[in-house]
Amino acid sequence: QVQLVESGGGLVQPGGSLRLSCAASGFTFSSYVMSWYRQAPGKQRELVATIISAGGITDYADSCKGRFTISRDNAKNTVYLQMNSLKPEDTAVYYCNARHVGTHHEYWGQGTQVTVSS
Image 1 (cartoon, one colour):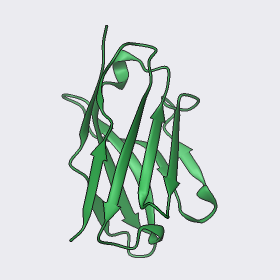
Image 2 (cartoon, one colour):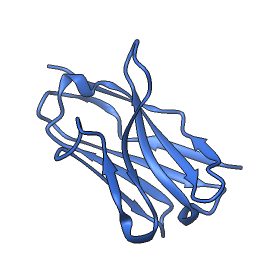
Image 3 (cartoon, one colour):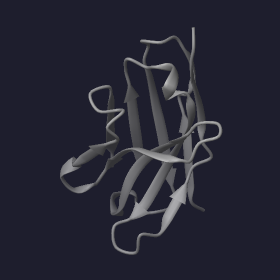
Image 4 (spheres, one colour):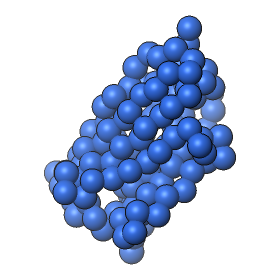
């Protein structure tokens, strides 16, 4: 049974930090590109950050570069998103995504709410 379970969301003040985690199970984690997406109310889901398995190459949305860091631990089947200098516009539900490097088959987590507000 495939599972992607996000955690670490919550309420934080502008300028604060949060670390999201996504624990994966039920598939070969190292064969998947892992990404974080987010969806704010009334907006489309957007890609935040991606990390491939081999070499740890990463990519970020322009709005997140320099503030967010994606990482993965293949031994723990977990992907992380460290978010610093958070802004109110970062408020959204954050989703973990796994995409197979060959077939592009995808799995999604259930999402975790991040709210940046004073």
